[in-house]
Each structure stands twice: as C-alpha cells, then as structure tokens.
Image 1 (cartoon, rainbow, N blue to C red):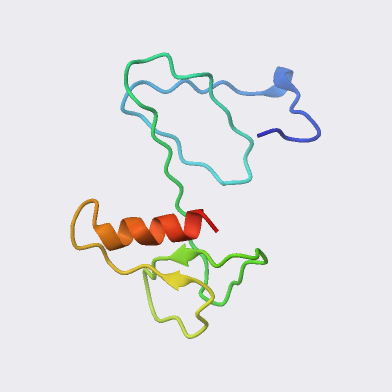
Image 2: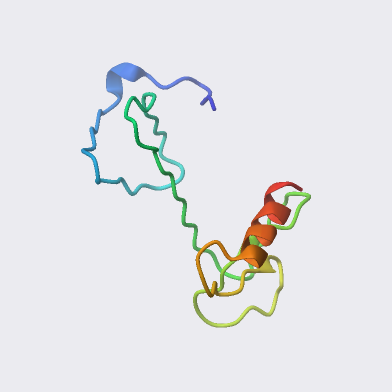
Length: 100
C-alpha cells in the first residue's frame, strides 16, 4: 500500500519493537515495517469498534461481533461467539466475507 502524498521520511519516528512486543495505534496513523527477517511469522491483528447504526458504503456485507448491547440495524453479518479453535462454520463465515 502507498500513501499519497508520500511521507516525509525525515520527520518519521522509528519505534523498534522487541520480540513479544506490539504496538497499538489509530488506523489513520501511517505506519510500516521492514520485511520480517526472523524464522517466525509476523502477526497483524485489527480491532475496530463502532456503533451498530454505522453502515459501510461498500458493495459487500462485512461481518462483526456484537460486544455490547443489541443490534437493531443489521448492517453487518453477526458473528456468533466461537465455541472452539478453528471452528468450521467460523472459517466458512470468514471465507464468505473475505471473498466477496
């Protein structure tokens, strides 16, 4: 991905993380990392919290987990609470929303 206009690298702040550390930041903050040179995988995880009244303007319908209250809008496919790791129906739901 690229940002336009390009970032002025002379004003960038380098934050080096040690193994086991992680960073939390707003999705609008420009961030990047160099290629992973280790023998272990790099894991990225995104959490986004929003009101149930919010609707996407994309052509596809995304999924969401309700973490509080109730949803009377139905703008997202409701993700059920997982019962176990690598649950087949949850994998199927993930494939549905990521291949539209």
